[in-house]
Length: 345
Image (cartoon, rainbow, N blue to C red):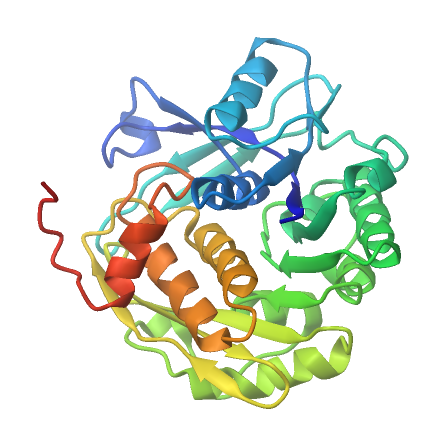
């Protein structure tokens, strides 16, 4: 199998222990993660060949981030070095009616100061079959957006499948460009598009009718079909458009499912009730990792690929940290309806 390539920033995540608020914290738990690196870890954990491309500083924290990728069997040979520092994000984990909070500290990081021409994309893609990026990267800086555009255009030229998770982050678009000025040129190069209702609205002004995600409860996939059709019309290269559907009853209890539209058929996955959430950060990344695995493993069965992605991301909510460490066997057990959580002996 040809390798999968993901491109983005891995950061140091600092979190108060337990569910303490920032103002209560006397210490922070340290974890390394980020949207695209989380996808890479998922894929490596499923046994697929995957390379992570990024730019890390030449200091001890850069080395720690590099070691984290190597520890998870992710290829790092195309990571370049540079920048003043490693990006950081602080996470306050919410509970019940109190939502989680994120504070970014990534100015002058390796990825924030990357520029087009720094990465030899033809070399990166010479033995690759799939390239994945997210909307987080072009939100960091103009240079990161330029490097991402260079990557997707090269991937198109070399016949590499391109996927994106639109991943709108309101706290990142600070360098003078609006998402609508940057994202269309990138997304028009994509074969697979993943995005939720906020991504579609904030990037392209699309919104499902009569849907208010702040009201909690369950979500109906059929309500998002109009948005999926509009995305496919807007970006005709796309072969499949997917959205995750999260019903937020509280910070500790979510319903979770997803739908996939191939231009003809709307596929809907089972809905899971995720209660007593351990860590919801990386839920979308784990879905994307599961989706890529599913589409590559069952190329003629979009329903099974979607079901695998939803089950995989459901399990991620039970795992502390950014990345999904669930195995293929565990995902398939849940897909078969076994959510008992019994001890395996």
